[in-house]
Image (cartoon, rainbow, N blue to C red; front, side, top):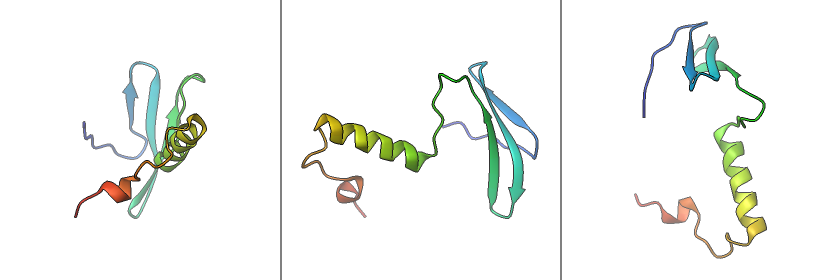
Length: 74
């Protein structure tokens, strides 16, 4: 994982086509602006995970499969 520090209004560029800009910093939260081509899907992680689960359910590959919570060790 690459970890970068950015300040308000600073950006990073991914693969010459995706631009991520820090648009607001409020307490312990930041707001990101993301510019990407229309053919690139951009989702919050929880939305992405829900989409992937739905795809697995529709394919029938999720039946009787343990969840991430079931397989984590403490």
